[in-house]
Image (cartoon, rainbow, N blue to C red):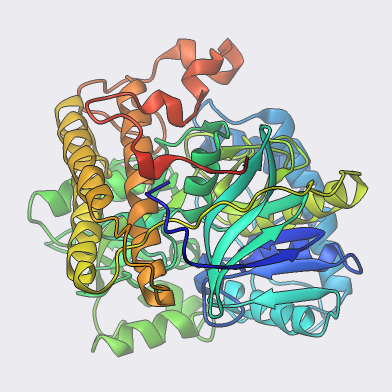
Length: 556
């Protein structure tokens, strides 16, 4: 933690359970915990937030005629390139099918045919049509908006918006609360149970499909507290982000290719059949690199949506609106596309019930590493994971009896850059994103990764030097968010680069040109050593090492 500003007071609130994050996983957990008292904190201005809101794809579940959870699990294992935990994949697909059936019976607004049966689509690397959609290509928005309405009507859940989680509060090696900055100032939430559901790290990269809030906050919180992390090098790049000047990059959903859209090179030739037997329905890492090679060579790549639009005229309203917003007409010509950071397979190591290596801390959704995604997530398994493990975490939290945190001396809040530091903070954040995208992006090598590590270490030192330890003034929420996100991006970036340097092979979404082949000894079935799968903050030893700003909020 940066130097304290002890003259600034803050409020202490006691809670039974704290949920951090307002996407599908966090809201699922909070709702499933009712009527237990829950405090849900989100740094967004309102519910819902995070990537779930922007998910165009659907939810994969084996609920169609002839389909089985075992088949879905086999596809999940195959897509994960040798690193999927088969037992966790079986749990995900079994519980997921049951969850989707329950949600359909509960009347949630999924797309259905004239007889009321769910419409099932097919996406890349799935062996069957098992993707359930809601609102066409607005599945995430439709579901989380419905859940947000339910959450607001649940009296046992107290929602704190514009609340930036700064550090986990630790005492004796266990999590005993959370330090946050809210509209009323610093708040220490004392609680024996904290659930992190903060989403991914996409906005740590210069080009991403993720919303601005996806800055790896939960991963950084857990890392500073000493939690075990895993598979951080595996960042999935979505193959078909619209290649326009926009941040985040508009996403052209996987379902388009599932409905018949085809990829064309600069001369209008379809090239994916030469890259993989499944052509446009190959695993995402294969499609992304095929596009990325051409884009890096200065050649445009285009997605012809017209076959998909003809097959499903009313199926892609979000895509049509995105194209129109950028002056593009997909009915007349193919759309320019390029890969963009999209999903993080790594995260905080959890068991089947979302328990982390720290007593009192659970994680679910994209911030967690359950082992179900391995080196490459299967399309439309992310919303499914959020639903399944959000519910499992809630049940485990409700069943655990933990004593309330004991009385303790109040720690001083961190010093935060204010005023004159804003421009420099923005510059550090922008440079961090550029360094990570260039050095640890779609294709990597040792030279580029080591250069990225040196640059990120220097940026981290620069950020730490901006600590405003003597002002004694209460910072603004905007200053806290600016500083906190810059701090978190840097830590996440350093962790991803470290993990990518450590994995000297190419596998799934992790592609190293200096180690182009997978190492069979690192397949899960071959038995991976624990130190190759997991790391903690102490593994960041390097020229700068863990900085003072990387320390957790420890309570005496």
